[in-house]
Image (cartoon, rainbow, N blue to C red):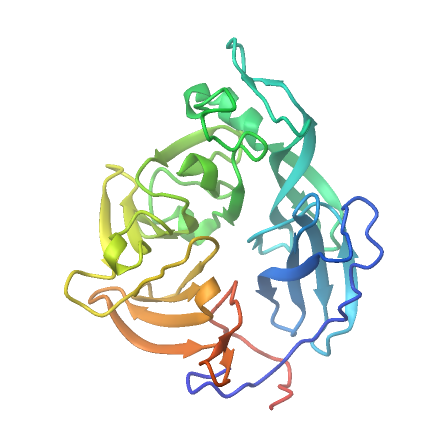
Length: 345
């Protein structure tokens, strides 16, 4: 759509797209919905899917052409937000189901999920046709990086989510342009967000170990984005409670210190309630503004990063007597280089 809300192109998908699931348990009352999106210049759309009331919640990925025809789909426990490399490879959050108890490195402690199986997060690297090339275990990467202390709370009274111990919700591939912005970075590194650990980190593309982490600065964060010498993060629950809890922070790579970008004190911004889960950031190529999607508010805002002001906003909802019926927005992205014809509506 354009900035006036006029819809330029629509993709649709058959609600029975995932009716033939073989690995995911999806009872009649379950719902499967799209989350992450990547638009190719020719109009192809790559989409990740998750499920509500399914086991596990991770479903898979599908690619459609500009006319909404299905090109391929893969049921591979893919989920959340992914990256696509210049050569077409896909870097996606995925998971495997591991048996509890699971020993934490060489310590005497275990992760114990009383359901028996727990979600073990992975980064799946797929070729352009969706075939798996490699899987990188997040638990192994954390242990190999000497970080067993991140797994706090080893008993059922701790309140720690041991059946979903890391909850990987984003993988950002560091390309050549991003790597040139800071000496810490190199092409092929991966920026990830681990919600349950309140952690964002950079996984070395060669060693598969974490070379940089920030933990405890944010609460249940999503959508880390490299912007020059800092990482911008949607901090879902770490903001001022009276203003809705949600904020956008910039975490400096060099110092690890954070700066509040939005909402600034005294300015317009997020009102109660903020976003408990999900949410998405997309930085404009000029680095001075971004799109913010507050998922469960059905709200997209474009924000000037230098002033923290809202340039415009879009609410996705239907009118009724009680007020707007809001529809979730999981992803909002800038669109450039479009070479396919629009089906204007």
